[in-house]
Length: 427
Image (cartoon, rainbow, N blue to C red):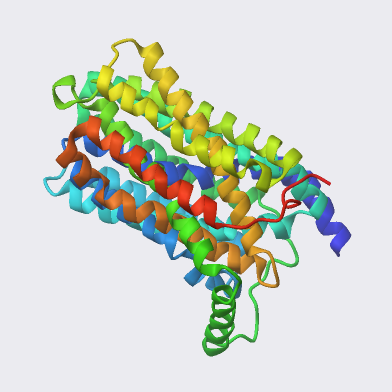
């Protein structure tokens, strides 16, 4: 039976892995980035954008709490196709609500629904990947899945935003974004139908039988408690929450800063220009930084590269201080500064992810890693909620200098953690 299942995997892997991980990345981009640009173009204040869109992180924060449900009931295959259909329905709700007078409240609720469903889709997709492929195939396709997740980021933050800018000139702001959201909705309905036909059916992809709700709660509580009994857990949680403190605030104001008029302290770029600068050049910088970070960490280990990476994620934020003070009019300078900052973030983020893997190691590796990713999302959610208010009080120039001051938190938690010299080295 296992041999037959492996044959199915080899035949189908290229037909479903690219589309599955493209579909995994696109909702996150829609909820966390496209929504920010859309609300800014629709006249919502920076304070409200940062506060309310930061709440959209919550499903990814609490994702570990319902991940056992995906394991216990139905198949991962069923969860994937059902969640994709629901994502399409949720995005359709956003598109229908946009022309209304209460669009902000209604679309936020629909985006939260999409975020919750997307987080569930993440759980099912990653579990299915491990069930449908052999270990060798998992290693081979890990780069492929990451590539298509990044492509989804470029399409969402880049191509769709550029398209929205073009449509704004033709049909106005509201109708332009209705078009963008409908495109996303139709895509997810189509990809759900596609995956119903092409996803393999691993014999191991079954719900866990004989588990009662009481047993499930008991097992999960045991796993959860064991996480908080790990050595240096307090230091680890502080690192998870504070290492990205500068970026958690910066990311919420990058697009509003690029879009705001010079009289408001921004750069006054068009929607299409933002799609190129942040959604394309920025993503390329982020991806390049992550790739190079992974290469050097594999050669020297996490401990050797921890400090260079922490300085990289911190010091490159100063490019936005420069942009806010000088406010250059040429796109080359803007693109270069965004590329440098995003490259530094991608390079420095490597240390963060490697530390999460290191801290999760042990008997409950999968569950503990899920808990770590919950703290990771919380570390982005809480600072992001107040970032807009801080910027409205300080203005863009002093806000970006405030972000630079917050880099002290990154340095402090980096100094606290301990990692074996051998961890992360290629053997």
